[in-house]
Image 1 (tube, rainbow, N blue to C red):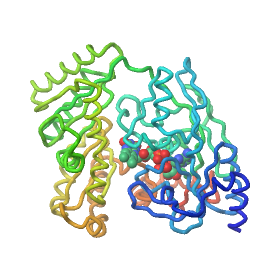
Image 2 (image 1 turned 45 degrees about the vertical axis):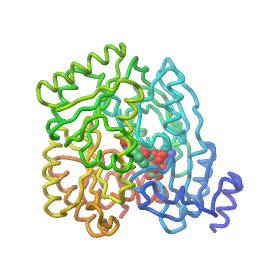
Image 3 (image 1 turned 90 degrees about the horizontal axis):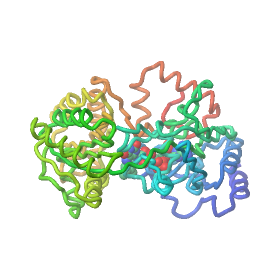
Image 4 (image 1 turned 120 degrees about the horizontal axis):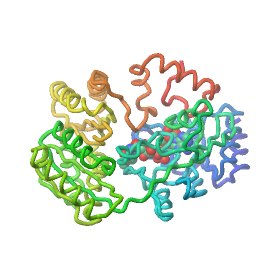
Length: 471
Ligand SMILES: Cc1cc2nc3c(=O)[nH]c(=O)nc-3n(C[C@H](O)[C@H](O)[C@H](O)COP(=O)(O)OP(=O)(O)OC[C@H]3O[C@@H](n4cnc5c(N)ncnc54)[C@H](O)[C@@H]3O)c2cc1C
């Protein structure tokens, strides 16, 4: 049966785009190297029509499909399981910018376009596509939408969801939904676009998207400041919002352990301020001029110093300095990976409760898992922290994970629940958090999610075992 399927797939796509032999680790192993699967085949269609045909062929044989973009996801949702029976459908060959509509401020792209290429195409046309994250050189817009990615500009522009007006999707039956409308108003029933966004490949395959563009800012400026504690960072956020309004486009925090790991593993990156308990990275995007941006920033930082909200500050003097500041922030996940396996938590909370959450979770971790190192950083402006727990310095990280992961997760997620937060802010559920979601999400919401999955994918062939358990 599988031989017939492979032969049909080769007939449809050509042998070169149905991979079965050799090193397939680029598609079978996730970015964190925590999930190592085995695919029946990796297929690489080049058009929506080919995607639809692949889905029909697989559905006819009851073979499940794992859609994959850049394979940079952090929750193990984009790689096959170990059974050797799943087809990985890679969108990487679907990488065309289809159209830019300047008057409508939209662009329409294939789902396999790499995020950085989308940003560059927008820039070349005189616009700004503001979705931005450290994996932008490899992740695809289809993967960003499938995971409803966040990143560094959510504060001003929202998640990937908020930047998308239309979708083209191949359904689990192999039909094509042509939803690339580009409309900002369309109240014609259920919003299927929002159902597909964040569904992590479990309800269909995104093949194209119409995205919102913004005017390019006249100037962008970056600054760093240091604070004595997290409540001071929250006060700085309030002050920055009050003074800068919508021109504040980034507000990231990093604790001392995060930047110490960057210093250790990337010593070539110069840190502009002396080490402090917390560092804040601020970005301002101004529609007037660089001078206006600098005046605004300096006034904010002076006020923050006067009110003793911050201890020190530096405004980037050049594009290169600004890049270095962002590079420091974006290097934290890589520095963590260099340091060894760690227990990641991508959580969100109301900004007003973040400091209390951190204090409570940290106190319990210190008591119950002594020596563990808290690598705490993230998008404070969105209430999103990466609250990661690294093994004690010099210890065996794999053994630490095996011994402590479940206990650490319970401590952190119980604390998140007690403070009104979510166990997945922007990375999604994937394979990593299926059990946690089933245990912690509202029971009625879970049964509605199961009903949607059963209605759209009755054979359960789209990325099974991810996001939602079907009983
Ligand atoms: C260094 C680093 C930094 C990161 N920073 C951030 C960050 O700041 N914010 C953030 O939100 N995320 C971040 N991420 C994780 C983020 O989710 C991914 O980078 C990105 O959104 C996934 O895109 P991808 O193309 O790599 O998808 P993949 O990893 O290939 O897939 C992710 C999920 O989407 C599904 N999928 C992929 N393409 C499609 C499609 N076309 N149709 C249907 N389903 C599909 C897959 O089945 C899988 O479930 C980071 C990752 C790394 C490695």
